[in-house]
Amino acid sequence: MFSHFSVFKDESKLDINYVPPSLPHRKAQLELLNQFFRFTIESPGRMTQRVLIAGRIGTGKTVLSQHFGLSITKKAQQRNVNLHYVHVNCRKCKGSFFMILQRVILRFYPNFPKRGYSAEELLQTLMQILDEKNAYVILALDELEALIRSEGSNPIYSLTRIQEERLKNAQRLSLIGILRETQDLDSLDPSARSTLQRNIIHLKEYLKPQLRDILEDRVTWSFKPDTVPSQTLGLIAEAATLEGGDARYAIELLWRSGKYADTERSKEVFPEHVRKATSSVYPVVRKDTIAELSLHEKLFLLGVARRFKLTDAAHISIGEAEEAYAIVCEEHDEKRRKHTQLWKYAKVLSALDIIETQTSSLGHRGKTTLISLPRIPASELERELSRVLQTEAV
Amino acid sequence: MPIEDVLSSKGRVRILRILADIGELNISEIARRARLNYATTNQHLKVLEDHQLVQHKRFGRIRIFRYNEENLRAKMIKQLMELWDK
Image (cartoon, rainbow over all chains, first blue to last red; front, side, top):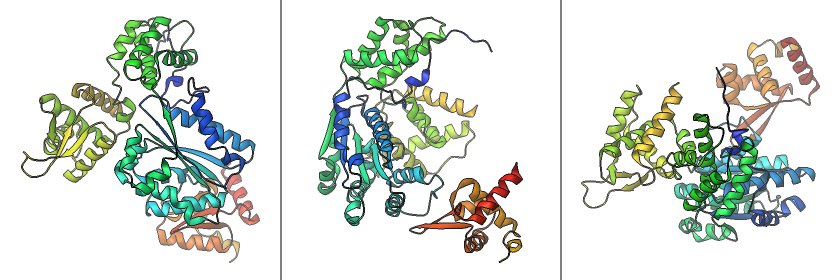
């Protein structure tokens, strides 16, 4: 192996899960969160709190909540309060209340059995564990819309009302809901909605100079000195502003541009690298979402992508998707799953916002599920899936 | 029950080792790791619990077993197992 110069110093600082030590242009919102949850360290157990963080993609919702989580648990530790911040992405949990609660319990009991009880039992168990350990939890439900879409009002209702059944006990479970649009709460029943909507922090899209500040921070942490010229940063900030002030997109673009520079063995990241990177990053469907799908979900999606490549139609039926999937399975030497399982995959992919599903209306014989692919070109999706499947096979 | 009877069973010793290593587990997981069936595991755990070498906590229908570190005998057995493995 021979090594060559890389523009990167530490790529991990550009990772989607990295929580930076400072959050440019989100100080006021961070302070607001601290105020909302002050009681958790000053008088733990007296009350619980529910806060919503809303904003478009890449406005810093997740990182704001995680940053707050890290700082409040540190403060709690200094005061000997057993406070835990648990961040769960509802979409990664496939919108399942059961899986969300399980993640919280695993924090306390890493070997807790994974099957054999209902979500309600699990919630009771969680409260029992918290009482037993004299612990407090701030549960951050990221991409809350996935939970609401898949399970409706019940989980929110249960989470917010669990304390009411335990008036004599300490109040232990607080919530942070993170979602894109507060309109997603409209489908909740009024009682569940009212408990959530008291404290809302709206995050506005970043402006170009703000994106630039964020990028400059990331460049300092992740790139070698003098490898990213100012004009390159300006171009990335501009591209991300056009994407609706999306900081996540900006950071991914920065990383990809660096990769293109490395591929060409360039000592600097030039605007041309950004232009190449721009054409390879699709802001809505991200590589981490695709990589986390199960093997057959990927194969099914590959079938869907290939089918869309062959047609100009806006929708394909699930039957057509099944046929394409069968061919993909044959190619990959995999035993194909049956219809009901594929229908479930379609639901999962729809919950992940990769595809859209709807039930056929007039003009179709019988009733079938129709699939559309509104967010990413079929050819791009096919390329990304083939790449991921190939990597997994190796 | 005298010590030779408590520790005469391979299954019981395996369960003790697993719990001493992992800390807390439910019966099905203990059974899987010890390569025993559920009923046998349950019986062994009962014996071990009667001698205060392990303890359990109940969460609804679930029982979670743990090695009883506070018990002097359990502590000494754990030390012996660690020494043996060195």
